[in-house]
Length: 130
Image (tube, rainbow, N blue to C red):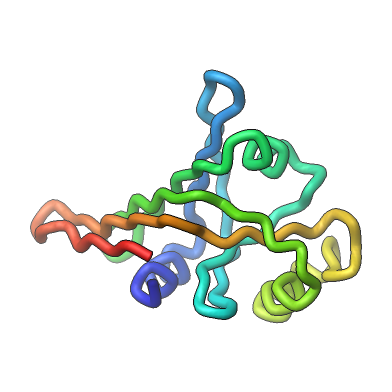
């Protein structure tokens, strides 16, 4: 999992896909954190992405860095604990202008049953499951 975290940090911006009924939805994200041995991302409960995850927890993430790309899929599990939200917001203090671990909007998700492939045109894919 650490390799996935490091790769996503290198990406800076990665793209998270959800399902909206029978339509895929993709948007840029930039938050990634490791808390209690799990890989997390963050958004707002009021956003469509959160509502889509609530209906269908299966997500996929893709990003590129250094001539390689990652495809990461898994179940996004909401963690509404203040400690998990605070850990994320402490890692991204610039988000505190919009979010707070005690508000009713901040939500963090960790990935469960995740599979990542880090690929390039020249090397065999690196497969990671966590």
